[in-house]
Length: 412
Image 1 (tube, rainbow, N blue to C red):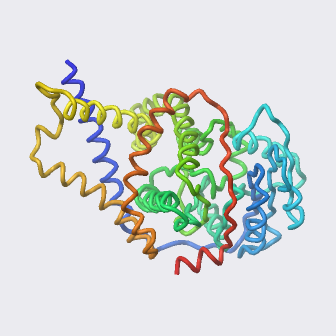
Image 2 (cartoon, rainbow, N blue to C red):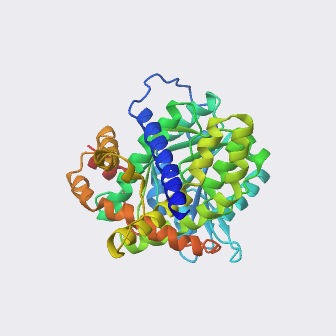
């Protein structure tokens, strides 16, 4: 019986893997035709910040110089439970510092929900809301790209999240490789197929009327995924704008990275429990591939956990136990198939880097350590499963001040 369950689970994982690989192939090309509109949409740019005095100034400078009419956007920095000079620095740049003090409801999701309620009370109402993190830098044409999509009928838009410090350490390089892969072969592929894209926590744009209709309501540790699920559930499909780039600072050390990814996985378990089965049922009832795809994306955290557990069981059986061994799926297939599967996984990340025109020799050299980063997701996810009820927001410290000119010069 156990043998049969083991094979069935491996088949399920193989099918999901083949599906994801097949879907990624649609990101190999980029559509060239695009409609451009004159600037007409007004934006409230929200920046969530908690003790970000080291980096928020660089973002304020960056946002001052966007290639968009200054009268069509205002910047509001949510100084959430700050104990440093974040608010003072924001005001010195002529931006709006909105101070929030609520030690009981901490975290980005709660801060955004509070800020939106404050916005709705203001005399001026905006066509759309854009959200950044305090350590970000936006491409000068970011708002132009959001304007184009809004004028084309999009209601929720995700920009291209790039890494502003991929050469700082092997961990930041690993983040960079992962994001290039996700942007090109997960996000762009779904965009090319007209499917729903997933939000990434920053570089997001929302039609104001939609937010007023739905409310924010995303206060889990992964508010971006939670809001994505709510949108797709009601038939609103987020779109991806490949040309709307922003640059995000990544943690320098493995310890800081593990802490951040643990928070992500804890939040993913919460969202998967809440939305997977309702979305799966709707996808079957409505025969809707888009909702099925998003349900699979939402439950991906369980797929990672199951992959880890199956790998551990098979490794222990094959390496440490004597006597008859457990059957594996590859045992029923020619040996060359396992090598093809491994080669495909290596190729897909390298292909993403080549497609995204990554030029850094240092980052390519760090590819040697990239498997360590990938494998480390397994124990992190395993631990997150047993601590998923932890709602404590783990703040990532940002100390690396980078200007947009430096990022662009390194990209060539």
